[in-house]
Length: 357
Image: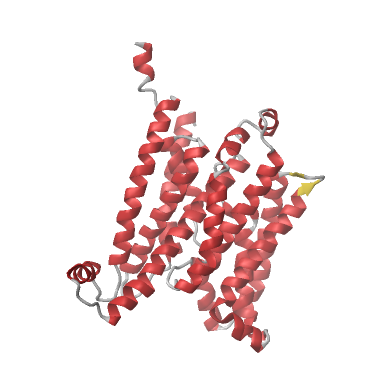
């Protein structure tokens, strides 16, 4: 009877491994379905199924159908997958590194630095030399956001590291201080901005995939994909770190190396994602929570699942943002906040009920 009961124990390792495998298959299929819906939905009167029917029958497709599907919807789909996976996976890594379920990618300073960089480019970009502006073109804001995110991350890392040891507590406190400073400087620049610049700042801050293009995707996707591959290999180390740094050291984990790789990986993935999409909240904090409740805390399975579910949720939010007030478009950050905040509150209430509060 004991053996029979163990087979249905949700906390048993075998059950969790089976649940994780099922989750991977389910999320993979769901991502394919949502991706198809993303290609099919849009304000333009272009039907994906009509185009597929023409291709199957050997008939030519029109220039409008080529532009809408191949140059607008397809790069937007690919960017949504990359950005959603980067934000969710970065959140899972940060929560594992800080051993804090409230941690998100913004703790390493990427959000504050990227936001300040973007605001500087929008408000002060006109003061740059004309040859530099012509060289950057439409990439001035993404480039400034990425550079600002990396500078802030390296600054926090420098402050938190002493004698080769990085204190995550110091990084957390320094990140709060840096966020406040960046907010103050951003407020001054926003006060200086004109009406057009204020509109640009608003839409960038709320996040959007509307500016997706193959050129933007090519500039951000390689860094995001490399970061995802590296992050997938951090699962065993983060599992050991869950027992504390001293225990992790005793079982052979190089804690400082794990911290270095985790911080730089999150900075690269989040910096590239924020640079091309703007500020999109709740993906990095809600997705890991949902997965821990369903498949358990094992980072070996949690990290790939987080990437899949993050991509799915961001694509679903993008479909809603394109459809709800079509032909206009709602900033995607508003949709993720409306969907993510109630889910996050439900998770907190459920956790409190489980621990008896």
